[in-house]
Length: 481
Ligand code: AHR
Image 1 (tube, rainbow, N blue to C red):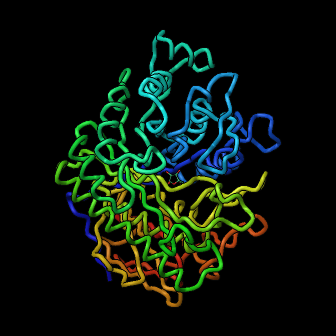
Image 2: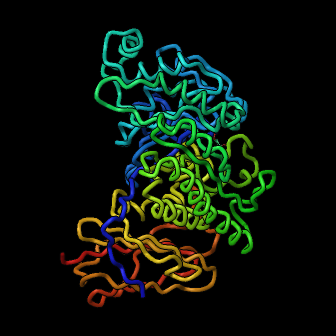
Image 3: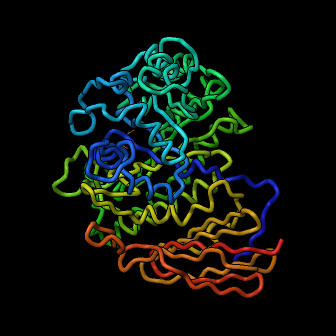
């Protein structure tokens, strides 16, 4: 029995923890989001309508774009105006990038999703002037040259740019820099990310690769005062080895447990980065932004290795739930996370095949978790649901939302809670269960893994429900206040 007691100084879970990431990589942007105005696929201003409808349903709060590694090769001017200039996408399959989807199309996507902007600027191969011009182009309301250019391209008003990332993986694909060199680069480049008008732009410095704690130490020591956020990237690989990561489907029990063990490392990684940040920033002004996370498997057979296309099974649902629970727990420092990536790449919400579209088990977890967005975190003891259980409880408007996961491959898990007062109504009770550990949705069988109603027993203030093996559930109950 888990007693739920709200604590006075608990944190709010920032809805931006449910952020997404869309890179010019494989079929994420082209086909996944953008089909063009003349496409036979239903679209609004070139953006596919089925995908937007599905993403609106899970309340996507913001989208990071244009990369990833692509960001440090992206020259934004090639992607605006009537004459788009193609380029080679050297990181991702060496394909020709048409630049048909650029700044205007990105903001159109955000407009349709009702989401905030998080743009990642180019430090690796770009210039300070280029970055400065881009920020002016997007946010300046005047007759200055960049604002005039934007107007000539059809957008009179500046856009709202909430977040701007200064470089991506600058320790790797973004320039192979050493921490002190990047800290200096960050200090210089961010100077020219200027705020025009009322709307502040939160500046995000490139943070560490997984457990590279030295990177965080140097960045916090040398540049903390000039940043609003520091990023962190950590991917879950079943084997932990980049040269042979493991398959997305058809895996054995060992791979199931290893994947979940690797994903749980996120907790320790965040804890240790946070401890470093706490020393320089005890007031927790600077956010830790996990702007790339998720599973990374060997690509599906017969697909371009540079396109990072992988299936998504019930194991991914458990990975999503565990990571979101970790982010919630660390919500006093972690205020944004961006799963990689939104469509057709890595641990995607959505897969497409031409005109066909399917939502993944990961998508359904994001659906199950929508009530945690901007909710008050209710702490529960570590391991409260036993070794196979994982949990988040939050409170909003007098209602408690309990999301629980069962990682066992064989055993049911009984979850029992006592709330501070009697339950007045069950507002939501759904479970994401599956026939097998690697069940997944395909274009021919799109509902193999789907949400179903869950039976809940309510007895006064007590709430009990049973999770089948390898399942995730959410129960939301109202209370008389
Ligand atoms: O998400 C795929 C890639 O992973 C991103 O482009 C890069 O930042 C990371 O290495």
